[in-house]
Amino acid sequence: MKKNAEQTKTAKSVKRRIVFFLMAVTAAAVLTGCTGKQEEAGAKNAAGGQEEAPDRLAGQTALERESGKDAEVDFQALQAENPDIFAWLYVPDTGIDYPVLQSEEADDYYESHDASGAINESGAIYTELANLTNMCDFNTVLHGKTSQNGESGLFAGLYRFADPDYFENHEYAYLYLDGNVLTYEIFVAYERENTSLIRSYDFTYKSGCQQFLDDLYDTRVMGMNIRKGWEEEEVTPYHFLITLTTQKGENSENQFVVIAALVDDAAGTIDRLVE
Image (cartoon, rainbow, N blue to C red; front, top):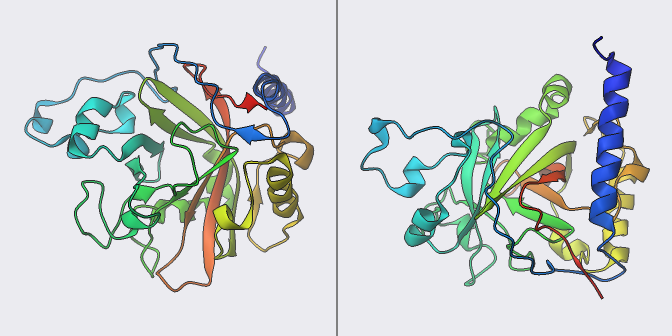
C-alpha cells in the first residue's frame, strides 16, 4: 500500500532526525574543522549514475567538459587547470553546474576572475578564506553573480526558489568533493539585507551558530519560503549548512539566499572535532 502524504512527511522527518543525531555526536561548544578521517570511498551522486562522456566533448578543457549531471567529477583534471578548484556545485533544474573555488590572494578574487583564473567580470562561484574547503564548517557561504535584471549570471537560477511552487518541488543540491559527494536539502530561500554572513556571525562557536539560526527563524519577510518539516527545533548548531548567496547587480541593497542542510555524506568524512 502506498504511503499517504502525511506518512511520507513523517518518514522524511524521522530520517532527518537520525542523520542529524549522528552528525551531532561529534560536535561541542567549539566547532572546528573535520577530524581528518581519510577513508577512501567511491561516491556516486544520488541524482543518477555515471555516464560516458560523448565524443563531442573530446578536445575540451576539463572546465568545459565536467558536469555534476554525470555523477562524477574529475578533480585531478580540474585542479591541473586551476588548483583553486576544490568542489563542484550542481543544483538540478537551475542551470547551476559549476566548480567552486577559493583564492589565497583575496576573498573576492573570483568576483572578477572566472574559474580558469582569467579576468572576467562574470566571476566564478567561490567561498571566502574564513570557510574551510573540506565543507566541515557549520555554514559554508558560496557566492556567485547575477546580472542586474536577474536574467543571467552563474547564480541567476537561485531566484527560481523565490517561487513557492518551484521551491516546493526542488529540494536538493549536490556538492562534489574529491572522493565524496554531499547531498543537501534546501529548506529556506528568501531575500535579506546585503550584509556579509561570514562577518556578521562567528560560526566557529556554538553561540554564533545559534544566533544565526535564531535570526533566521525570527525573520519575517514577504516571499520567504521555508520547507515544511524544517521547524526551528529541527536545525541546530551541530548541522552542516551551505548558504548560496547572490544579488542583482553590484549595488543592490539586498541579497537572495538559498540555505540547505547536509542530509547525506557518501564517504562519511564530514564531521567536527570536539574540543
